[in-house]
Image 1 (cartoon, rainbow, N blue to C red):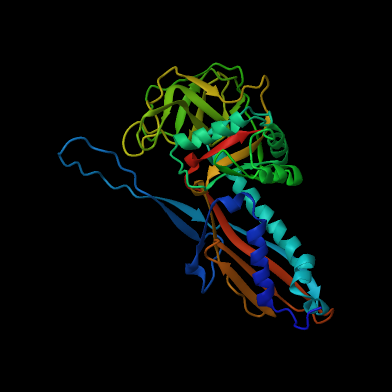
Image 2: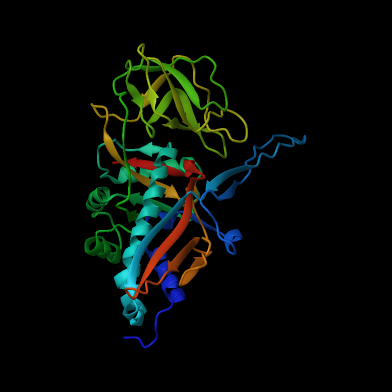
Length: 407
């Protein structure tokens, strides 16, 4: 038993340490802490602007060709304030920090870390690259390699910052599928003793029970065609025909391809040989004649610095959903392969209120994390009601550097 009473600063620092260790999916993303709020604190709705690098094309010959510099930034809104509240007694303050942490802090912070990861994994609906079959748990090395191929085709850096996040079922399936691969005895030992894969295919594997699922739309077997002669760069919607009448053709998160529209490498602008995939951003419902308008991402761009497709969609080009199951409405987990820069988790300091017993913040700019604890005192029962708060926001800054692995 410690002779020193625990203080609010010690408790807050311990909370931050546990949060750093408990993150799963979020541990592999770009995390940014904005110190402009270090003095007065931030509020829900505060914005951090994440600037994206400029992209240029290469000009042939000696003649000077000055290109327009188009700055792009992605606003990251701090839209989520989450907290866990608990109370402890005066006697508990005489515990060691380890004992206090095990009893109070760790359960609270684990709940917050899982919420952060769950919200981040909801960004699957911003990602258009995908591999696998909806409704089928991934179980081959080829599928993981195909996910890495998508990242390669989109110029994701090979810098040791790639991750593959799987739900428990997918992890169990993949550990079993890859147990025969040649690896060091220590790696094999870890697979068997911990049921985890570690590193493979140029990525760090991790399991996260917060992997989200979505339900595919009602489109399998339909002959869906583009009914649009005016597709242009910058468009994010297309008119379709041939859909099932009065049905929900696409749900948010559905992925489709367009015949003749191929993805291009973002640096060379050469076709990758793979049809460009698009993700549906609004529920698409057909009218009584089978006509519909689908809204999607990314925007069409067939030329220029930010070219992403080989050609614009042609009228009557076939629209093909990625699902290949014989029935519609398949519930499918959204496992994720991603580079660190695909997603950003932003956090900021919350204000320290007055009129309470104690309030403290702990921030780690390098880890991009910040935690606040506010403590009151109940004189009638000699207990300390306490709340642990975080303020954060998620953004898909480079969704092309991620790939969904259907499960």
